[in-house]
Image 1 (spheres, rainbow, N blue to C red):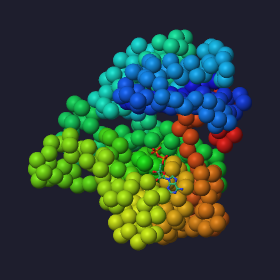
Image 2 (tube, helix red, strand yellow; image 1 turned 135 degrees about the horizontal axis):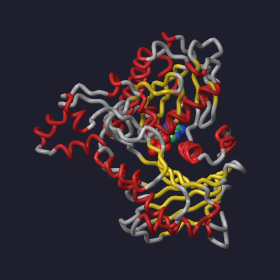
Image 3 (tube, rainbow, N blue to C red; image 1 turned 180 degrees about the horizontal axis):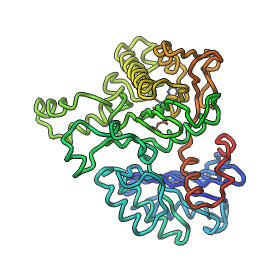
Length: 412
Ligand code: ADP
């Protein structure tokens, strides 16, 4: 069974074709700079061998999807022989708004509902829709599914998702906490439930997705009960270039001081802030760590802020969950940065957390990194958003139930 997973952005389209039966990524590729000139296309096979890396003009997502299909069917390097070999297409859709709490099979009605979510996801959702429409045109008859980044967080209780604004903003515009990275939090928390010694049906865990964008989720018995991102992915911990939680009155304060409008301040908070804005060095943690080792005080400060805020959020979730049994680190930083994991867990030692320094050296591999006598189990679990989307696509299309139990490391 082959599932095509599509992640389309405003000027990009990423894809992976997954073969569940043979447990491999058959091909993956990236279309970049769509519609902005100088487009690039790259496509590689299951061995990671780059079959194509070329400049190829793509004016819109339809062009990009056409190039993808051509590469998949290329008679010289065929990945598949016919589009009928694709059993389903899973699309990442960033914002499900208040409408979608689970994946949805694409129909005219669902597309209409996705258009209604543009107000909450103005940057991403129209781009996600372009990917859906391009695939519909090129692969009519292949069932398509939307998987929403916000859906996993739809189980948040009211007290966790409401903001302290006049109630009418919630009633009239559904302004509330939605949360993001739900596909990843769901994937690693399900896997954690399989690995832990604690009872999975009541497991209390904190999932830490730490990458360019970072977020946390408090999960109880598989259901998310709090998360650090909000109406938009700007809130929560300080990130690569995003400021995370700040006093909201800073926005009009900067606007007045510098004669800017709120859109400009929003751009500064999204693109010029975070650890990059603090350090003046980079948004990449590897660069920050190198700079800190070389004695750069602002790089050290940026890292300390990240560690401090991470431990503060996890501790607040220990309160929300009334104790925690497991912590999971995932995504670029979470999977690859032993120092971060050590510092954050040391700050939480009062919860009875003890890391095994040898096990904590792991990078990018699934491993328990806490000692056997640690009161909280700590895991590194590599995320796999494509596989999570493919699984949810298989589940909702009812394609093959037995495949849902596949272990992540066996697939990719
Ligand atoms: P995205 O949110 O774009 O998906 P990723 O999850 O790929 O991001 O994470 C990217 C970040 O992971 C990089 O910016 C970098 O800071 C961090 N990272 C990757 N490898 C390492 C490493 N070996 N040590 C520390 N940080 C790393």
